[in-house]
Amino acid sequence: MSEFLLKPRICFGQDALAILNDLPASHVLLVTDQAMVKFGLTECVTQVLHQRGITFQIWDDVKADPDIATLVRGMKLMDANYPDVVIALGGGSVIDAAKAVIFALAQTRVDTARQRPCFVAIPTTSGTGSEVTAFSVVKAHTEKLVLVDPSLLPDIAILAPSLVASVPPAITADTGMDVLCHALEAYVSRHASDFSDALAEKVVQQVFLHLPLCWRNGDNLQAREKMHNASCMAGMAFTNASLGITHSLAHALGGVFHVPHGRANALLMADVVAWNADYQGQCDTEAARKYARLAHLLELPADSTRQGVASLLVAIQALKDEMVMPAGIRDTGVDSAEFEQRLPEMVAQALRDSCTPTNPRVPDANALTELYRRAWAGNPEQGY
Image (cartoon, rainbow, N blue to C red):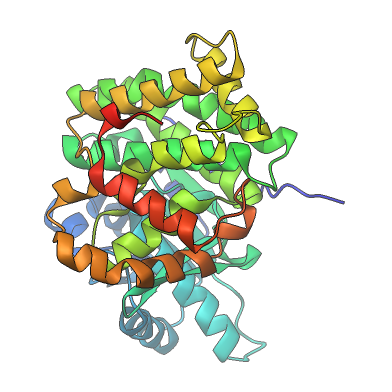
């Protein structure tokens, strides 16, 4: 038997935030970060809470890649004044931190009088899809640990395109490529299904059509809404199908060298697609055939499996080039000697990453090492 989780209630569109007016609450914990406070985005929540006379406290020191110490601070804050609603407003790190704190308190505080608070996620980037996933990424030293549990799923996801209109072009590119990577990896995952495939196919089409528009003009709210929806749909796909080694390699690269997650995925994605397709060999894997199907959906040349895979690889590279993204890891400021020195450490982390078992092709240390080195160069002329 297989199953497909569809827990969060998804509210989307220009007036999606209006759902806050109907939310039953007496005390709210608002989880966010300093950027949301600085740019006044938290006011879209706090104004409603003030108007409704709902008490609230704000935890606003969540930083990118939340670590164990951050989560402990959040647990203490939440434990001291337990809410009936938790609202996470921010990017993937903020939503992941809220998930981990709710989960950790449930595991460490056995109190039958306490019910799990209603959990509302309001993403302010179109990237992680964390608002609809049972995943949370937590950093421990230089390693990113992936928590996976159905209880991590929010109850309500609010997709308000106005909240992503001010995202700068570089972050729009990074997070948008993360959306594409989620769809590509869920599509060829060992746990893929008809349901996740349908979502992944739609996401890939949406990304290639709308991401460049968002990058060129962030105020294009129609394109922003399409990418915000695509991010959510990609999250629905991969929370059910899981991911693959692009994410495993990106988690390790980000943990060791602090490369932003979406950018790390973008640097590794094409080489992993080529490897999964066995492009240098027979190019006759199930993954290759599915990649060729995506090329066909994008109306790219795909008269054969190999041509379809090649078309998809060219399209990925063209999308990166259009948004002026780094070509290779070496273009992100990572020192070459330190990269080589820490390569075995990153490979070991990627091998034990929770995304690796669902990759369509089983990797070993040599394969992952070669993929890192190809991504280091980032030279599209080298071929696949």
